[in-house]
Image (cartoon, rainbow, N blue to C red):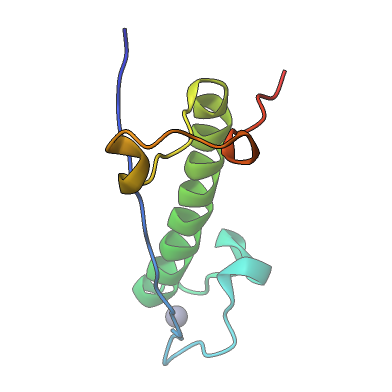
Length: 93
Ligand SMILES: [Zn+2]
């Protein structure tokens, strides 16, 4: 049996630009748009790549965990309160 509980919350607002290449945008220009092996532009590109990898990992985790995931129970229900018929979640086939 594999059992896990996972909570992830990431919230960052980033505004970054290279002082030498202020027009460089890793989203549009990619790795090939980096001029002169600029380390700041590479950092911007790596940041963008990390964001894409994180999005893909979260998407894949949610997709794979979905069939086995249980809906969260509220604290009130854990104490033994019975569910009313309207509160019972529908099971997806
Ligand atoms: Zn640069």
